[in-house]
Image 1 (tube, one colour):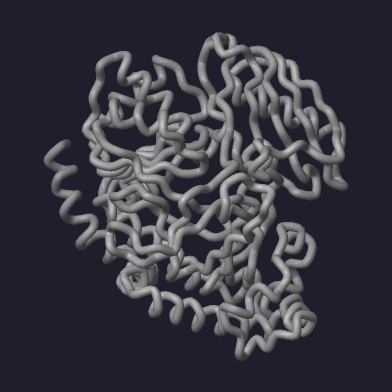
Image 2 (cartoon, one colour):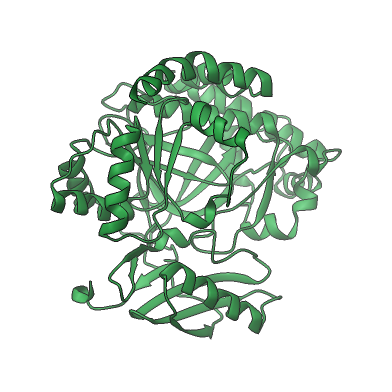
Length: 456
């Protein structure tokens, strides 16, 4: 089996995957060199590329989207001659706009059936549907490939994901899907929703046999897994680790380094914007994907750290469903100075407020709160915002800002979902509220464990 895997390490990235993409007319790989050319360019050329793309996206939006046509007119901005300096004159695109005015945002003459449907992330509020044209989707994936090459990974090499929940996987795979998974995608999925020593021992065996070139995960389950490896004295051969979806704290980095012998790379992304920014080998902030995005930070005095504000993003390629000055809901800072690696890409040096807690059940199994993302909340017209508070092993409080279609049946369904994720029957007390308190960063924490520190 090791000999087969070694052969696939050579054949899949160079022969099998390119052939598969040619058959499926997937242009992702073709755009990677374009991405690398921009992210390696001078600051002036980067800004010139972004300005060209902003003007093109706005030109199409102004002529084919009634939503943006009205916005440009109201702001007194000519979409055919817009520059980066004109963007702040435009109102922000809100999640409510995506939910309530998608017909107006969609470019005229474009059928939704020809687009890729996706949904916003659900760590703070309900997912909201949006669309992308397939060419923009390919360019988005190409940026992720270019940045992952920094850690020595490319598609076709074995990838392990400590990620999500077992419910995310299909109940069964067709033989074609099994062949594609074995030869083309080569992914090992390790559900992070419930973790105890028995489960993590199995993960360690699978990783050792699979020998991934990259482990991609969330910080909180990775920290729990790293602590297990240290207790057991297990060392796994994992050349590179990347983390996303949560804040990666210094104490977590220390634990991960001691367990794996490598420093994790942090990256920031979202469903709406794809790979936004990625750390280089100097781990001094995350380099922005300037090929695909233009990122602004709206500085606010209420934040303690100067230069900190709300992160606002313009997609530079999606013309079918333009996302111009989209308020992400995240908070951060940008550094435009040249990095030690030599790149002149601006860097996001901090993303505040992306934080979830780890729940604990009566079996002392740990369930990272991030595993609930996009699963408990599913429809924005049912639930606008939600926060889950754990007071005891089986006692939970759920704060809900209800949507117009919220019903008692919604609470029954949420209770059943919570039982499933916690792995046992729990008592959930529901409270409907007008607003849910946000953290100082401005972000809403989806999950909070309020149990005593010694409860585990």
